[in-house]
Image 1 (spheres, rainbow, N blue to C red):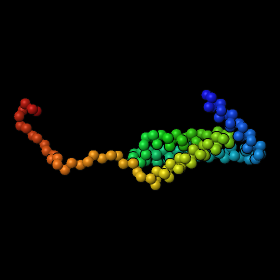
Image 2 (image 1 turned 180 degrees about the horizontal axis):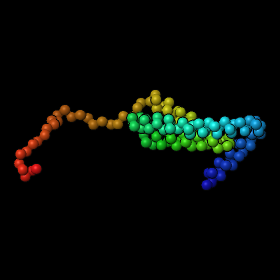
Image 3 (image 1 turned 30 degrees about the horizontal axis):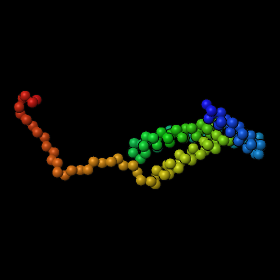
Image 4 (image 1 turned 180 degrees about the vertical axis):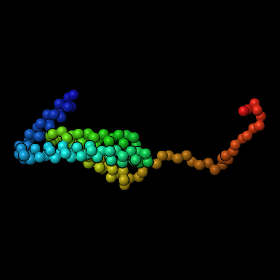
Length: 135
């Protein structure tokens, strides 16, 4: 609860300061543009979710990374929809961190699950016994 109050206080201070510098019309246009951007991100979230799900299925990312990516994108989009400059700055940074994690995962080494060493001295066999007591 205290973090929410601190966030609201900082949001009001930053918004009033920036709105006083750029004017009312520019503030209104920024709020409308950032809300539109947040709505567009939410509308296209299914594509982001699909890409993250594919990366999870191919074991390019872990479950923690999958959750972090999706939650970051959603929270960033919601912060863009809410009016205020501080929330917009944090929301944009959350979207860029999502973008940067995609870039890092594209060019980094892919996750490979550990494999068991193959033992060439093992012979596979099937034993068939004709005794009825064992059936």
